[in-house]
Length: 492
Ligand code: FAD
Image (cartoon, rainbow, N blue to C red; front, side):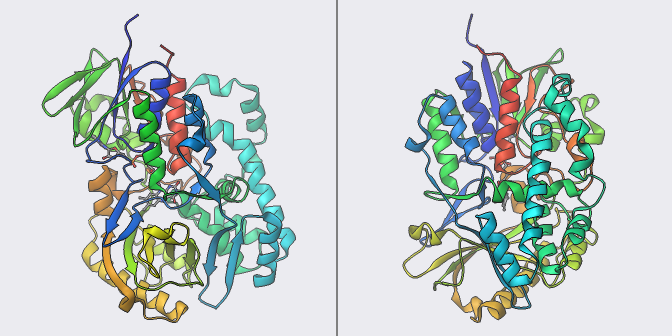
């Protein structure tokens, strides 16, 4: 039988993982990427001797990356190395409270009790609840397609359905956390996990309290060489399996003949294939690549609220800060007001929560000697035509004032170089609709079911992977989307 050919639109992490899985299955795989580099959001920036990871900075569940190497019969350690973090993140509150979020549950719970007075037992109980939600939801919502009958007729799915009330879908995350803890700082700490998939803790279901389990049970990691090494090592693996990458090649169309995906059109040429996997945001896949076929557009799915976006300042800093760690959070004094600004007013609050990631803490050559590479990020609304230049200028001032006040240093005077990424840039660099970083939001309990499936129900041979489709955004889930796609396809 002649080898079947698969084309993949986009070399984001899910596109690369799909390429690896399909190559292992025996397909001839070609990846078409609009940019001159792979990785999409998982890319890097070089600036005046400083190196920055452009997007993701927190690695959880690296076993999904290792799995790709093992699948290809390789030892992951020969390609990709990472170390587990002892302190996941350091937290700074405006009232002077400092918390080290230790990876070790007992140590973390004691730290919370020491710093806030919240009993350690409440923290341990909350994390146990988080684990229970994970064990109920993981194989239904994350590891399998929600859109296939087979998922529902399995014994473990049935068991999960009986335990459904335990996943707490009818309260908001904030309400559940405010019920679990007396101390407002602890509530704020756990509410923050809603932002891990671009959602709002005051609207999102308490089911999202599963997220702390991913960090505290599976751990947080730093890859040797920085986050971009994930992209590099997986591209090396894919190329070794014979996958061909075509960079600087924007795909204009999915070629559909008689209801079957027959390839793509790029640079004025048709590239024929047996199946097409789109790693492009599903909204743009329909609106641009399938524009000729409005009848097949899933209107309800495409209308879903988008996740939040991000504003990132990449600052080369000419000093080092021993009080900072790899991941640092500087909380807003009024979290509700911050989310109200993002989700209701669609603007940026004057006192946003600021995340500072400094990879040079673990990878010293990411910055010159005695200097640090600061990735300074705040959550912002998706792009709805706001006056971003004004908002960015105001945010820059308020962030610098906040960090200067808390760290006791004039931060503005320490910045030697800067580049900025905002929702418009995220959309133009990665074709992410409205610059949303996690596809659709999870602000209601039906969000998981309304996310687009990994396979088209209208076009035979058309598949979808990446953060805008099931099971959602973030590196681990994007990797799972690739796994679900490949499991739908026969081996060659
Ligand atoms: P994307 O990264 O969206 O890439 C899609 C690729 O397809 C792009 O390269 C694009 O150029 C290409 N493409 C699109 N259309 C076409 C076309 N028509 N023709 C050719 N090529 C096309 N996740 C975490 O796990 N941890 C974090 O700490 C974290 N932090 C984040 C911080 C930021 C600032 C951002 C932006 C994201 C963050 N995320 C994080 C989310 C994570 O980066 C994404 O969920 C994930 O990388 C998305 O991967 P993807 O496969 O959907 O593809």
